[in-house]
Image 1 (cartoon, rainbow, N blue to C red):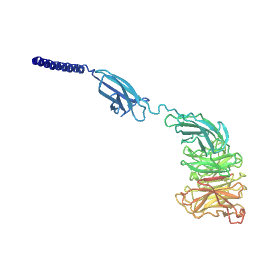
Image 2: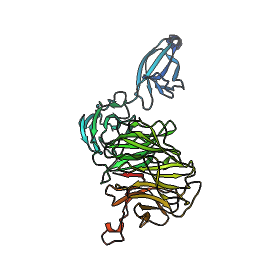
Image 3: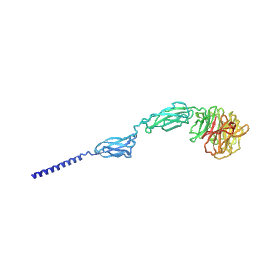
Amino acid sequence: MKVQKHKQMIFLKQFLILFILIFITSCSEDTVDFAGVGKISGRVVESANFNPVENAKVVLAPTNNTVFSDVDGYFTFEEVEAGDYSVSATKENFLTNFQPATVSVGLEVNVVFEMDIETAGNRPPSTPKLISPEDLSTMIDLAIELVWSSKDPENDTIRYKIKIKNDRNNDEQIIDELLDSTYVLSNLTNGTKYFWQVSATDDINEEVWSTISSFETTQVTNNRYLYVREENNNNVIYSSDEDGNETDLTSNIISSWRPRKNLATNKIAFLRSDNFETQLFTMNADGSDVFKVTTVSVDGFRQSELDFSWSSNGAKLIYPHFDKLYEINKDGSGLRLIHQTSDGSFISECDWSSDNNTIALKTNNSNGYNVSIYTINMSGNKLTTVLSGVNGAAGGLNLSIDSKKLLYTYDISEFESSTYRQLNTRMFIYDFETNTSIDISREKVDGTIDVDPRFSPSEAEVIFVNTSNDGISQKNIFTQNVNEDNNIGGHNYNREEKFQNAIMPDWE
């Protein structure tokens, strides 16, 4: 009986061992049947231009294995168990991209991620609508509010840009970085047609441009003052009315100076640089219809010191060319030599009487000194000597309407230098009937000079430039009464500043 039990125990142990061996064998067969591995490789690029995206995070699901794209956008997952996967790529400022991948044993699967920026679905602002002024508007003031409208679908901040051109020159004005849909445009020119256009951008999409609209400013009506300012290293001619509303008549891309208006023709004559020479030009009162009059240059001592004159009816002009004085028709014809200095002195300034019978001249040497001021008749014969045999600078000739008086300036300090600096230049009126000169630079501040004077239309006042005698300070235009008799209470000449940073005035 005991033997039988012992045999049963041995059989049970053998059965258990056999079962374990079968289980182990079964597990070993599962390992042998493992599907194997493959490889996933790929690249991350921008969808818009296929530029590589570096350092993008690439995740393999469901294993959550992670790699990062290299500088060329490439990435690799090694020894990936065969099966189906989802691969994702993420990078800041880009939309996350998902791609499926099926891995087969021993094979390489290639996945390409074309990444869109986060704003890829963002829509641009609407095309700006130009509201005011209406297209083709006329008689617009010299300062105008431009008004337009635009909306953004996502309510993004809109930045505006205005582009402005005109029919007078090739200038283009750009005003950008505007956040408001209005803008006050000022310093416009009379009688000019302007074209304007507005763009809108949300800084995500390309800017969108409006159609082009136009408007035309009012014509010059009563601008009696002319003067010059320096801009962009060039002289620019301005006009202004009695209230100081001014407009530029010439461009700052070329130098134009010494404006002289003729009331009979409503034309302005002026000097301009032309092929390295100074020539005489004319233009309308609004700056339009510019015409070159001369081919023989206006020349002599210092271009800024040269002056010319109209005939009273506006048919002719006279101007200096070194030691010669020429007459020319306003259309450029009929050039005629009127006068030539006997000693070779340069003629720098001239002024023609209203009856066209007398011309006042200022001559000087090549340094601007050895000045002589005198009058001639139309045959070129000398009539009266006003100033000669003195040291120092002089100029600013302007005959009175009745030709009985001559306005001029003279530096009473008699200072002379290579820089043509003046120390105490004052205004004088010479009386041809009494052959005497009167100093009218009353109330002039010590250390300043008065230059470039002109009679007012009534001749009760003069307009002139006053500046420090240091030769570098700002120049301003003033007006002043001529006689004490014009002032209530006397001894008050009403010296008044009219225009700042301005030179070469004319008042017609």
